[in-house]
Amino acid sequence: MNRSLMVVRSITGVLWLAQLALGIVFVVALIVLAVLSARAGAPTPLVVTTIVLAAVILALGYAQVQILPGPYHWTVRVAHLLLGLIAMPLAGRLSMAGGGSHGRASGPVLHAG
Image (tube, rainbow, N blue to C red):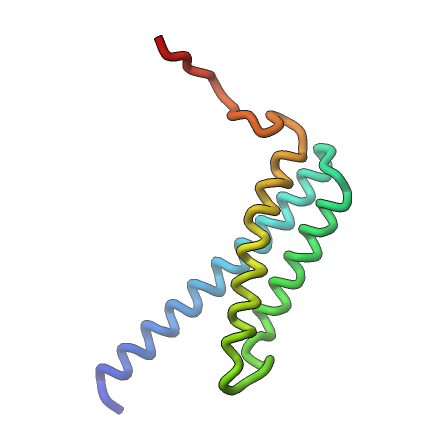
């Protein structure tokens, strides 16, 4: 096997593992945020939606290699990406709905002048 091809394959493997680890961290953080927001008084439908979406993202990420193999596999990858992009603002909304600062910046407020 060509040496440069071996290097590319090893880099691809490392990047795949990094993406896998980041995805798991993202899903776990999403679930932890949902649970903590629920304890802080966030609306139950928002909490449940976030937990269900986290589970769907995890399941799709785990099984996406086996779903629709062939030339249309890119659609599965795009769906997985879109679910992650949907989850990000949902997490932001959940963090604001859980009480606390209600969307205001926490910490000291600096006034100009």
